[in-house]
Length: 209
Ligand code: ADP
Image (cartoon, rainbow, N blue to C red; front, side):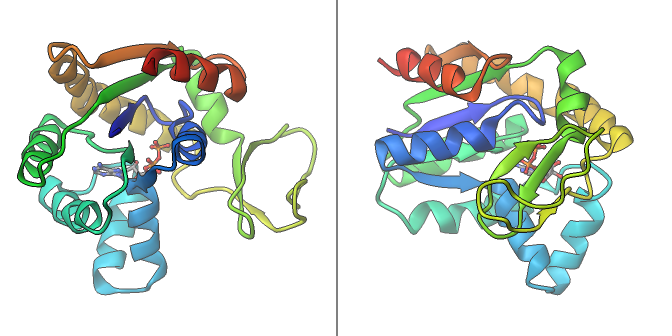
């Protein structure tokens, strides 16, 4: 099973990918995490990537496609793609890569979220440095420690209101055409992302059957 999870920034792709990974023993590929790991390595490439991501723009297609190919080749498990493809060019490249490896995309799941929810969700998003848990905090109450493990919480540099709005514009312009690309293939389903993570996951599971 190879699943592409789509959705605007903040729709819950990361949370649902982890659930899919655990339930179906899949390999989780988050392009956001891959790019952030390159930034954390301190490499020259990482510095170039940080300058792009921090503004809320997409990294060039060629760069992300070549990074992805190696990761796909490194696993024989089914894959959940989180944050890829984000452009039609990436979708075409993914199809070609999968064909070369004698694999294919089984299903494309769009997590739908009303736009008015997006900016609020993104700005309240925090991640634990220790256990990686993603939470949505009440901004009126100071909270600096992870309730699960006590680790330090941080906000991503691209999770500010202006950058969130810009990422949404980029999503409309570059990523929504990917929805049309997949809609014609008969593998595309939509689930309502404006529900608890558990309910969204239940709906995703139903859509897979
Ligand atoms: P979100 O889904 O909340 O935007 P991600 O962690 O998936 O968060 O992505 C963070 C940023 O990483 C994006 O705004 C973009 O700059 C970059 N990025 C992630 N995936 C891709 C991709 N497939 N192509 C180009 N840039 C990407």
